[in-house]
Length: 123
Image 1 (cartoon, helix red, strand yellow):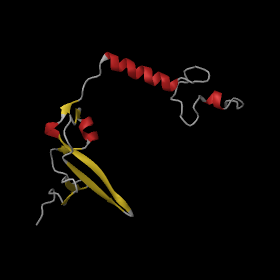
Image 2 (cartoon, rainbow, N blue to C red):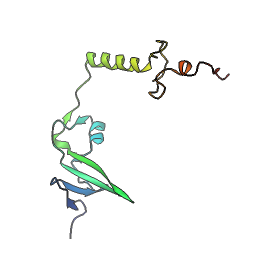
Image 3 (cartoon, rainbow, N blue to C red):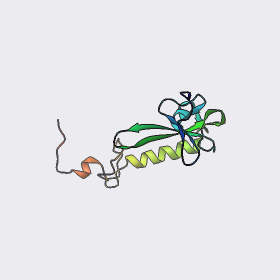
Image 4 (cartoon, one colour):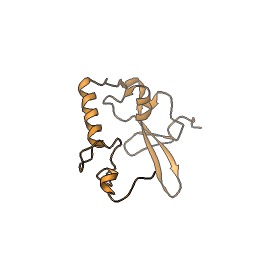
């Protein structure tokens, strides 16, 4: 008999494959590592989990070993400045050059007043 947390099969790349929600302790997805303040740190994928779906292929999530993960690098002042500049560029309308106060949707490519100049704002 196979234990619940043992891999049900091995994928083509020789990674152990676990069923959804049955991964053993000590493994985490990328998002779970980030929530713990960690990053994979250059390690290879250790295993994967699959969630079966009807009429489509399974959802796959890659697992990393928590004991080999490294702490997330802290933000430096230069990185904070670059991030602020990038976010400001996403809010600046290329047509009127004003800060729209929100991220301009790529579908419009400009702020709402420039995209729809003939429409009056609702009172």
